[in-house]
Image (cartoon, rainbow, N blue to C red; front, side):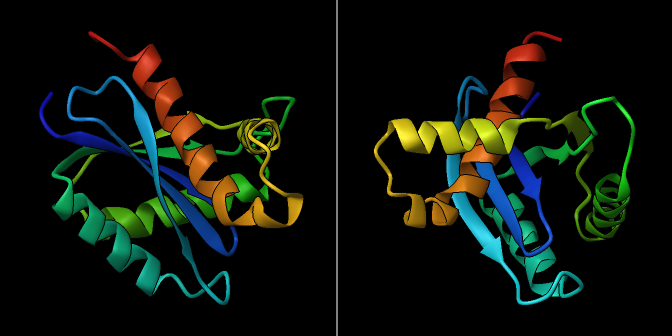
Length: 143
């Protein structure tokens, strides 16, 4: 596999973004892409394409928000629609990965790091993206 892997945590008004290191060992937070309305995705899609080009991304890992009972709710439907729109913009494989509890883990990391509760919103989505990506990297090494 050549190229880095991009991790995405897709939400109604934000997309957290993380990137792997060149050796595909670790995930680092990159940024949070925000939008005014859930339906306004053009800027988000353009920015993800720019990041894919800049970092020579070979795979995108997209968090898939299954319910705790393994069922797929409306958030899964929205994620699939986003994936389909993104596939029209980038010629890169997009892999869905279970993202249950990642936002909760991200919040715990920020709390343990001493980040004030009111400031966590700025970072939580990109940390969740890094958790999603790191999970993928750890479970798909040498496969």
